Length: 133
Image (cartoon, rainbow, N blue to C red):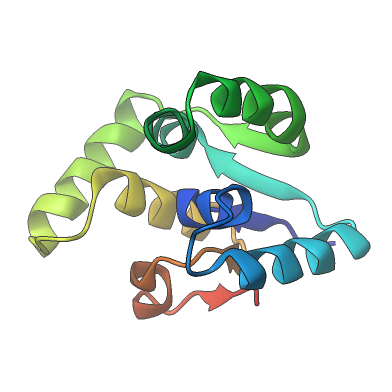
């Protein structure tokens, strides 16, 4: 079974009831759970997710995410080489709304030959990745 990359945008949509993609995220996650899809993300996505959850929902949401959701994820820990390659890509593309977290994710998705991405960030579809819906 092929792994699915999980982006911050999907986690936030799943956990924040007021998020515009909340219903879609619940449906997509139910589908992923039913097929027991292995989930993968990066340490940068985790950092970004912890920060956004803390800001929007508070420290209890961070704790809950860490205890209940993070164990479901295989994590690619970003090392110096990956960081530098992602930074080079970011600087080369020079898109104002593209982030280092996004381009790091792109490199991991390509390097791991991942076919599907659980995300609601348009940068992933613009990059040509197939989104889980």
